[in-house]
Image 1 (tube, one colour):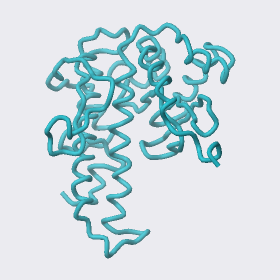
Image 2 (tube, one colour):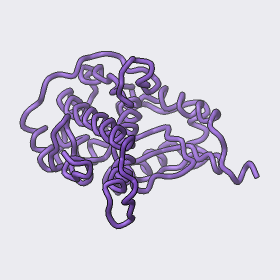
Image 3 (cartoon, one colour):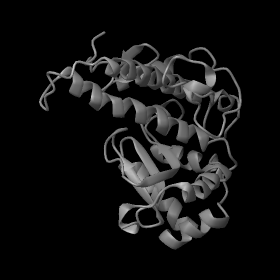
Length: 261
C-alpha cells in the first residue's frame, strides 16, 4: 500500500487493515456484526505507548465495556462496529507516524507530493483517534443534567440547560462529522463547534469537554437515517461526571496569547 493511498484514509472509512467507502461500512455494519470487543473499563486518560511497552506510537484504548453496558437507545452491535472502526484509525495513525520518520522531503510541494499527503492524513487519522476516545469516554452514563462548575458555565453561555441541549442537537443535525463543546482558553468560556471531517474546522485554543460523533457510522445500525433519535439517545447515555472532570481539568491548560501579552 502506498503512502498516499486515499482509498485507505481520505474520503474512505478504515476498518482494521481494510478500507471501505462509508456506504460500504454502513451496509457491512447493518448486515453482520464482527467478533465481540473484549469488555473492560476504560481509563480516564489516553494510553501512551511508552507505558505499555508497545513499539507503536498510539495504543487503542479499551472501551469494550460499552458493548455490554445495555445503554438505552445504543445497541451493543452498534457500539461494537463503531469500536472496530476506531481501532482502524489507531492503526492508520501508527502507519502514518512510522512513514513520516523516514519520509522523503526533498520533493515537498503544495500541489502534490507524498510528504504533503502524509501530513494531511496525519491530522485526519490522529484526530479520528482522539475524538473517538473522547466520544466513547463520555458515554455510559445516566444522562440527566450537569452540576457544579460545568452547569454554571453552560447556563452562563446558553442561558439554560434546555437551550444548551437544543443548541447541541441542532449542531448535530448541521454537521457531517463531529460536534465539540469545549472550553475556549482564549476567552475563558464554553463554546460549541462543528466539524465536517476530523481535521476540518478544528478550533484553536479550545479544550474539548463533550464530544459527539454524528457520522452515520455512529447510529445507522440502530436508527437508519433518523439522526434525531440518535441525538436523544446520546444525551440519555451521557456521563456528566466525565464531562465535569474534563471541565475542571481545563484550569491546567494555558490561556490564549491575548491574555498573556
